[in-house]
Image: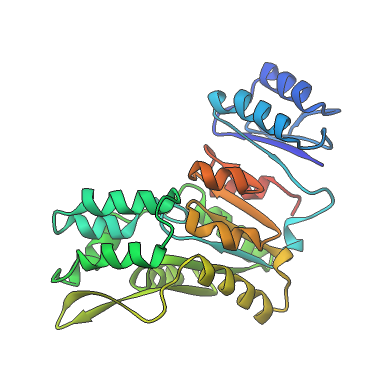
Length: 284
């Protein structure tokens, strides 16, 4: 199986030599200053995973062992989480900042993402309830003033879209943001939660079915069926425990600057490179 190394700075010959030895790779050839690939390496055992983590982590190198013989164009769907994956912020935390409750809401968000709060629905309701009475105009302020795309997001999306892959943004966050991003980035499908707004104010309630881990996984499967693809032809990118179920149904799962529980279960982890690190994993 091919071994891919990526960094945001040039890879050194010494680092390549050590990584090649660790992985028992026959060769490790630079594709660019920041990307190197070996055609084959040793089986990815827990011991090899730990060894690569221990060596690459302190050097800000991301490594991946990917299935041989696949091209990026063999996939049909790229599905992404929104908060802290496609974008750099947690929208609910930034909304809460406008009513002085960011620390309290962030603590619940972090615990949920780490998997310490197992009932996502309840954790979301608790956080949204704290927003009751907030002027809905705050949502636009968060989008305009604080929302930023993650590094490499636009390049990754433009490339996969040019290859004909469909795109899905599925989020435990809010429709207000996913709809704006859908138009901005020309995404095919989005799904998220709807905040109830009455007389221009947030009521502290969520309308309709909450997009939790099960709904995320179901949505990936439904969109695959709609486009005539199998889940094995889906790439899923996420960062928190709420993403694990949809990552598990995919042919390739990418943990993006993720919590340890997610990195441990993902096919690939990007801790340093941007979302466009996906483009280096397979020939196009």
